[in-house]
Length: 418
Image (cartoon, rainbow, N blue to C red):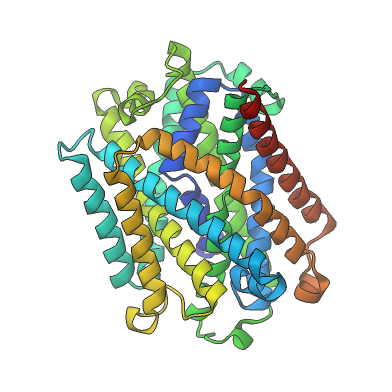
């Protein structure tokens, strides 16, 4: 049983680990340093929320044989379809650029190479890897890269935070009504329950079917209980892992940076200080490995997610299982997204701030998409007997309401200047 569980790990685990990208690490670090332990409760409720939404995305594709962008194209008016696609691609591209900048800033701490050169190295290298490597090899590499996040788990125990206080903050929700706290909340939710993962999870389910030789929509359409059970095990494991890492990043930065009055993280070096109790003079190296490792996982996910959205919306050949010559437009969008990300960094954007605000942008973009996903997963016409349960629908609409309310509150208090 244990061997079967680990054999089933794949798209869900990769999706969960990709969620803790440089943007996620930065946002959780800002949350811990600036707001202490007050946002730990979000990691508790976001775990079932993530599991439900990602499970819905996967199940929609397993039943329909298509990615959710293709389903949205068929079921929503064209202007709404195009608006949602544009919103996600814009959020992905900004997030991608911020992640490349974060990787370069982190690597610069240990490798004295100009940041611009590192930006080019990471950007071009990741495009080349996606173009030349097969989906099976990419999946295998991605699984190993998920291990880079364990540094924060270990450090949280090394720094010995006040665990009784931590558990109280984790179990009892608290809200603070000011624009920064709510913007940070939107950022934490946005980097956790993030739009690009919806499309990535959905499209990976299609890729898994293609890997089994089911190359047409008709061949992929429909599923069975064993497949759905295996999918949920994979998705739940990925979402628990993602939120567990988020919990420990917040605890680590709150107990180190926040406890010593460093509430405003503005540089990669400041963020790296959270790991010094574990690594000492090697803190920058450990931080760089974490940021670069998760960036190598997340940047291809972001770029490919945009390509899947565009391909399914405008109906051209797509998929990592396809060679470049058969899907040139798909791979062109991957490359263009990374090139735009490189250009963003040449404009000298603040890497840490860009990472944080990309999470906020994702939080805003997620709200309408979650509504659409829950609506699709609840459709008897589309899903048949695999329609989401009442409990899943309740969690889905609850996620939509929480993220919508946090976003509205953020804009309200920003307008008030408080």
